[in-house]
Image 1 (cartoon, rainbow, N blue to C red):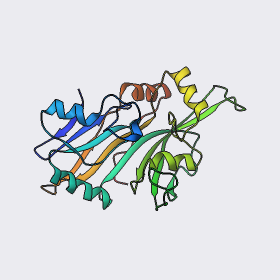
Image 2 (image 1 turned 90 degrees about the vertical axis):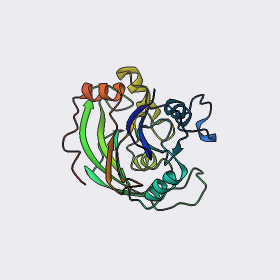
Image 3 (image 1 turned 60 degrees about the horizontal axis):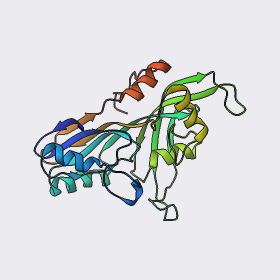
Length: 237
């Protein structure tokens, strides 16, 4: 069952699991299940995607109950009127502890034209673990709050890799040695990128909406192991 965070006659907000493809496409390879099909069967009605998340990413996903609502929500995303907050674990400790990554990105094709892209980040917690890897006897990791101002393809993943602090568990843009470390020492087999909160206007009433997706057991277990909490994240940035 897909976890439903909110629903009414116009839209549904769900908590997408990590590893579940949203819909059929050439990008998802050999996926056998798709969120949009599972949700359609679960609610017994047609549903339409308002936006997308990568297969490896978990968290809030908005789904419309008709094409008109999907188009209205899509316009909000295109106009950058939707406030998005992600929780992400990265290799290293980004400096400064908060900032903006301003780096143009291509679309799904790396050879395509680059367009402006900006991601704000803030360090929430750090840790140094006594595990040797390469030439370092200890490894540093950080928990970040990331807020993409634009919506380019794999923007957060590419931006954090660009500043040499890749997302842990990212097979395309991350570090294989650190990904293996998390599997072997922490039993963590997912990419640690979670679409935590969305703020948007209801497409029919215009009312301000905020939806929050709880973390899954693997993510929570890692935070507990590192002694990380999420203080002071709810305030307006």
